[in-house]
Structures are given as C-alpha cells and as structure tokens.
Image (tube, rainbow, N blue to C red; front, side, top):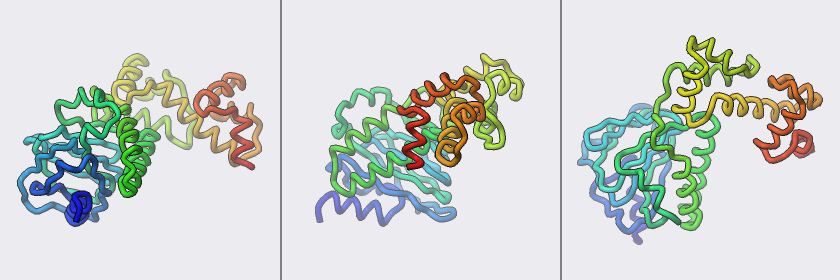
Length: 276
C-alpha cells in the first residue's frame, strides 16, 4: 500500500491524528469530521506533526489541547497548529467539519506562514463562514482526485483570509449587532441606530465590529442589503427603485452602483439572469 493510501486509512479509521503514523511524506491530508453526540478519543500521547495541522468546524464543537493550552473550536472557527507543536483531541461533540494538515512546500508562496509561530484560532462569520466551508469541501474533492495544483492554490486562498490579530470569539455587543442586522424582520438600519440599541457610541461599536470581524459596520449592513435585494430581484417583479427602498436605500443610482460593486453586475442584469 502506498503512503497516501496508508494515511487515508489511518485518518478514516480514527477520528483523530495518530501519534504513531508517519506523515512526513504527505504534503497534504484532509478528512471530513462527522461525529454523533459526545465522543472522547482513548487516551493517547499527543501527536507532533511535520505538517501544519488544521481543524475547521461547521457545526458542533471540538476541544483541542495544544501544548497544555485548550482551544474550543465552535461553528465557523478555524484552528491552525504549527509544525512540531504537540496536540491532542480531547473530545468531539456532534462535530461536522474538516481536519488535516499540509506542508509549507505545497504552497505557491510560504511567506503567508510567517505569522504562524503559535497556534492560531480564528472565527469566520456568516457569508465568510459559508465561503470557508465550501473552500474546505473543494480542497477535500481535490485531495481525492490527487489535484495538488488546486490544493496549493486553495490553501493559498485560505491563508489570505487569515487575520492573525482577530479574536476567535466576538464580544456581546458585536454579537447583538450581527443578530440585529441579519434579523429578517427588520430593515437594515444606520450605524447610529445599532449603537443606540447596544447602548454604546458609534465609534466604539465601529471599532469593536472591525476588530472582531475584520469588516466595518457599514460593510455588514451593505452585505445584508445586497442579499435581500438579490432575493427580491429573483422572486418578485418589484421595480428597482422599490427594491432599493425596501432595503433601506432611497437613491436608486447609488443602489445600482453598490449592487454592481458587490456583485459585478447591475440589478437589471442580475434579474434577467435569475429569472431567465
């Protein structure tokens, strides 16, 4: 059996890394996590890999111990573990996602890894989380096909989304803001309205949101506006000006510019494409 097949078998038969396996000859490994209920692996020595390990959680949670420091990985969160850092999985709780590892040599450019001197735990929220989930799915498919060219490019794209200074968890004020702005029962508001709702200043809310998510308050509001506009353009015959007003934009020309900036096409072109 070749090295790749051997490692695939290891990864499929055990839901955690084996400390006894030889991963040195594998530039990339990935498998899907899909555990039911609470699962605690048998006590094993911590694995110490020649690869950069990763765990991305779509739903459920995974508790990982890296050199004595616990990392609780929850939905939308990614954990990167530097090479040769001992780690062990403490438990899975209905965890769905991906785990694996890669060698820096598989990347077109390893410079983005300069920040990875310690474990990195980062969260990706809403549309960014959906993007990351699909990217890991595509990496899994490419791995099964032996398409190392796409794997290298996909990992490069993954690393471009990493912001080393972002926290893995978000403050309550930011969480409340995101829940409010994505509330389907309310129209997207202004920065002032969300700040007043949270009982903090506009500047403080803006700073918290930017630090925690990597996006500004205005960017999140625009994301919601465009998502709702897409739905209305696809499923109704409302005029463009009425759709703009329904997502909180009174100026139709500004709405059209914003829509094209975010999607690459005008509202009318998008409607024609979606409605055939």
